[in-house]
Length: 209
Image (cartoon, rainbow, N blue to C red; front, side, top):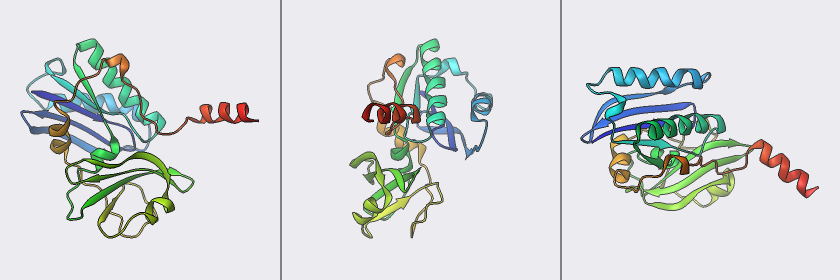
């Protein structure tokens, strides 16, 4: 089986090609600007390094949130277009769950993404990627008040948190967990923003005034 994983939800971008449970190519780096113009050449370059084409894929895994509104839309749009045009299966993955693939000796992992104004997108997972606390938008101080030394705190962002660890992603771990998930119709795949867009917030505020 041949898989493509696309993650553009944050500036920490991941593109990976997997065949027979082996990572053939992995691009993992920070893209701070112009992601929309950079990501397709990166995907093309990844396929240039393997002995098959994008048409030979069996499934596409796309990280559909949470994260940056723009980043999420870019990855979801690319994945939906490829899945629809090539008639490939598509499976969504949480960015926080992907971060929780990090190896740790703690009982639980708490991946976090900066959502600004003292808020984070966060979830709690065990070492088998079982969700202990669902991904949500939460005040960072409220979250930290719930935790003790049994929790590994993870983030790619420069959050002002003691003992914060940078995630080390295990692509195969997340692929193996989700490779037998029921695929979605590409048109049914939705971004998982976990909060309202600015436009939606403005509409909500106007309706409440």
